[in-house]
Amino acid sequence: MTRDLLIRGGTVVDPAHGRDGAFDVLLRDGRVEAVDAPLPADGALVFDAGGLLVFPGFIDLHVHLREPGREDAETIASGAAAAAAGGFTAVCAMPNTDPVNDNRTVTAFVAARGAEAGTARVYPVGAVTRGRRGEELAEFGEMRSAGAVALSDDGDWVRDGDLLRRALEHAGLFAMPVVQHAEDPSLSRGAPMHEGAVSTRLGLAGQPAVGEAAAVARDLLIARLCRGRLHFGHVSTALSVSSIREAKERGLSVTAEATPHHLLLTDEEVAQSGYSTRFKMNPPLREAADVRALVEGVIDGTIDAIATDHAPHHEDDKAVEFEAAPFGVVGLETAAAVVYDRLVSSGSLPLRRFVELFSTGPAKAFGLPGGTLAAGSPADVTLFDPRHRWTIEPAKFSTLGRSTPFAGWSVVGAPAATIVGGRIVWRRT
View 1 (cartoon, rainbow, N blue to C red):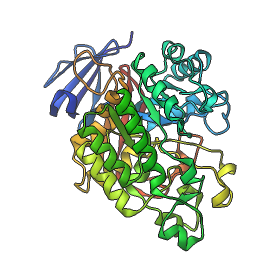
View 2: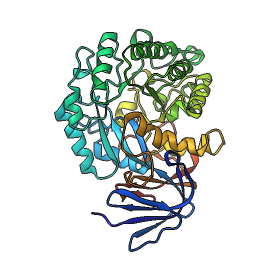
View 3: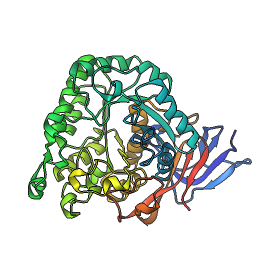
View 4: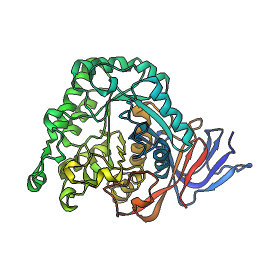
């Protein structure tokens, strides 16, 4: 039992419950007890939230915590700490670990390590296929019972159409979405960046936008056939956004996420940075037209969530030439800040929609607890300071990874505190 916590004097923005204004929030026994104005302390610990925004806890649907197998790059504890420092109260851990999370034992291990960390909640995502090899389905029921909330072969597209159909049908029995990494490898061929004018100028092989869009289109047709629950990770192209929008208009059970780097950066960064591996990720950074389409998609609801695709690597692995470096950048500690600074503060993205993308939308997409501050909901709260000015310095990160495309950015707006289960797990000092 934790002591009651009263968040006093903040501006509550809770789209799911229709609240936007000055309210106090009382947390008791791991749940939201009441939201009103004002509320008496009655012995509760008081958190002065004057000048702060009070949101339902942020949820990241797509992180790589590397444990088990690559604890030199990240551990579940360091990743969960980074999540809390970025305002996230919960994260979903992808299964491309070593061993792969394709069974009850590994799922339970990830869940237990997350609970031991005692910061952000860690929800395991199980593999769709054994070993992520794309040949036979993993044991969905066993992983669900051990704590898995979704299924994905992230890093690899489930290219066998019949296998995807069976995965969607089987996953429906356990109320889990199938998360697709939409990339047809016969088109992308593992190229290090986007195919376009910039890759031509730089003399690098490129991944055409159609490599993602073709995979999205095929997957949507299969989901339509079997009425499966499908989620697309890290959508990056205008063609994909258009297909997903049309599918939603047809009533398909499909959701999608976009990352801050795909919303804010283009492939020109590769050239301007002198081939810095901080700008090598998969999907790669695309063109300005794709960025505009993604931003439109997050505004109009085509994109349901902003997720980081947090993918830490050991510094030595990234300190090589661009073509040889692994894909992936970190993002947990910068995501909310850069999106708020560049899109909300500029007037492009309404604050209410910002909260939906980081909290309400992710909770709905994966059927997770939270996403609201309604009475009885989990006492997971993100407090955000819209006036805090700071510079992104990777050396100060909690994650073990340091490779971020946002290094050196000056931003206004940052998480002020993160509360999980009614307990303050991180507070900016």
